[in-house]
Image (tube, rainbow, N blue to C red; front, top):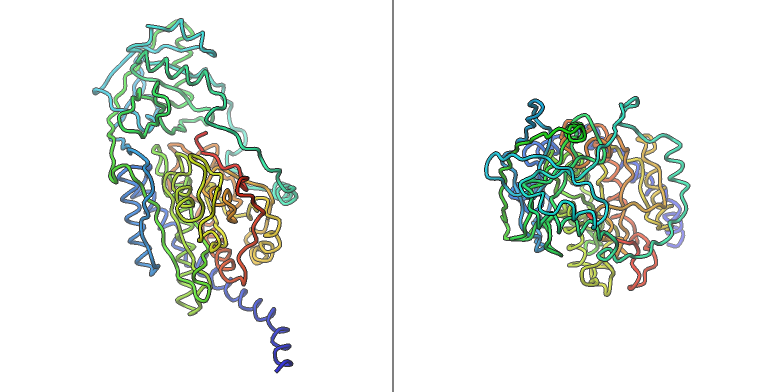
Length: 528
């Protein structure tokens, strides 16, 4: 009997290697040759984009996702409530025109939560040139009925290199050789700096101009990067709060903004007319939802492996690279795994749980609220864990995707040295697809942070930059046409394998040491 056991132990690594190889060959076939990722992305973006948190459009997209995931055979598919978030916003019509020295249509977009105007309104432009609170006094009583320009002229240069790029071997080697990141001290973001900004917006609120306009800090050639409007003098209020006062706010393309300001600097008085027709809406009475779905596990089904992406977007485009791509990839990863299970008859040991978050763009709200509900009590208004919930011990890892359309080149280990050899073995199968870089570096700004912040292994994948930061992120060019099909197929395939391997381990993934009063990561809002 002991001899048979000895032989089995000798054979086990070979059997395990063979099973993993067969599994990866199967998911490569399903994910690369039988992919549905671009169809999923087209539905998310073309039919249900944009998906601003709090809006009816996002609610309809979530209903579609629930129906779609159920049709694939996933279990426990539901919308899980969180909140309150506040009111949503829907843009029905917008136009802007310049009238002097001649007419031209202005390339511009209103900021989300800007109120409607009384039809087409016009006003004279005035450039507010102030860098400290005392300088605001010279504008007192002069802004009512005017269109205020807040930004200076931004010089732009012609592109002599393509805006899109991929990582080269030196980039990846630098990531791979990065040391363990030093813990970052926590900051009190609510009290840090910004006094002039607060004074400026209080002043604007008291003056009541007809509109406030600005321009992009990046981008050109008609690409407009635009997010949300800012309330004026009501301290502690957000644009989503019911009844808050908001002055109409519009972001212009840099070329058109520069032209208007140059005219002012030349002593001319250009006029602009514009019309915003928008409505505030609360389809869920101020609450919002995440979409959650599962593939049930086998012998370790009470433990979970989570993977997800944020489903919400900003409003100028259709939310393709941010983050229809990530959502489509994670849905496709679930479809790949579910197809493999049906074909092979093999179930994952742990339960696989997909999450499509909302509220990410306004401050990681959906994922943070999920973490607080299921895994850890935190300080009021913050992310420092004060006590852990029973399910904290039952989750092995959370995997996230949210950096555009680029293919996966590896993974950020978030300073967790113990996962590196594990990930190295798993990613070795994907050298042929270019996905084998592991860096100890942290990366931020998205939904894995809430998990990592309470001591759960939470990871974001390394993605090719393409033209995410300088062309599509939060811009009017964030549309399906800028998704790279082969990259998204590759990403879904690699992630499906990582999720499966995590589910099949005898042990959960190792965790970084954590003191309940000292979070693993300095988790802060994207908007701060």
